[in-house]
Length: 157
Image (tube, rainbow, N blue to C red; front, side, top):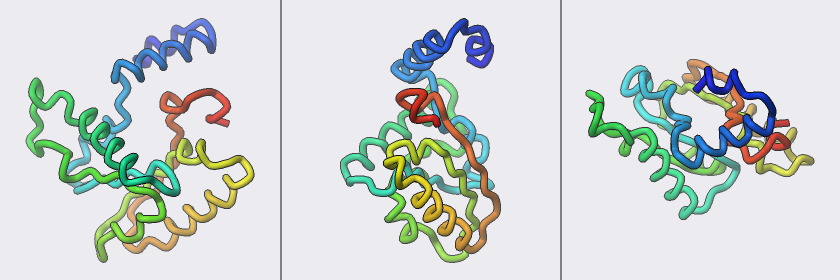
């Protein structure tokens, strides 16, 4: 995939290629976490936005589990399915999900802010960063942007 992306001739070709991969399910955002589970990471909480309806959270959780577990039949992993270790919630529910004394690794993916109105992004980033800074047992923080999952180039700005 990386090689193919390096050979695109235009932004339009890149967009089309990423759209095709997204629709086919070829791009899986959880690939990086798989080698880290069940240790040193025992569970994953995906927070795609400030708030999330129960229906949207359930749909996203099912999709995340399907994508991460999609190849279990052909290539089983010793730690088995991620189904019981993956949770999708809104940021407003996050504090209630954390367990006292549990080590925490945070990845702030900037695509979280794509749905936040432009005039509120700085305020929302500050709110997220304050939460992260106050986490006890924080082991690592990374910041990323998952451009292939954004709807368009404007959301990546």
